[in-house]
Length: 200
Image 1: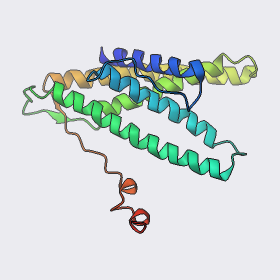
Image 2 (image 1 turned 135 degrees about the horizontal axis):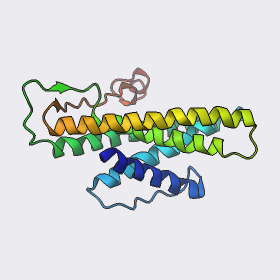
Image 3 (image 1 turned 180 degrees about the horizontal axis):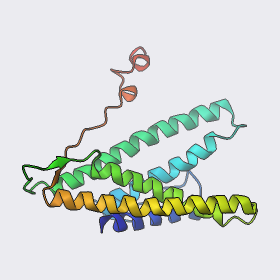
């Protein structure tokens, strides 16, 4: 199943990041170009680094200049994340381009890649919730509370994985069709954001 395949790559990316556990570490993609594995690995690495950016920026003692710099990095990371999702959808569009779509086919509320984006974030939630459950310096109450949350996340993993695989099966069978709307982030566009436009 594609969801299992993708999740294993996400787990690999997360584990690799946490060897050094440093947002500034060099990124190396172990997968070949023009391969979906390369896109999935890169996608999750972006999510993993951003997860830790979000931790850092919530430091109540962070210096304002450092916070602003970090906010810029988060903005850039969000754009990279969106770009990667669109590249993953391009992969599926190409893969299913010759499918004969049934007359009664319906469109899904989200594209395959945006569902896979949720799976990548879920992999991070599960990893870090497992860390909380395993903490030696936490109270029993904290550990029990996190264990309950972990159970919910694992149930969500099962449901989301099933939904992704069903969506892909339906697209392949012509029961659903893909229609991708590119993200139009107006605040990143120098011609649309009035603040950026005024600086040109």
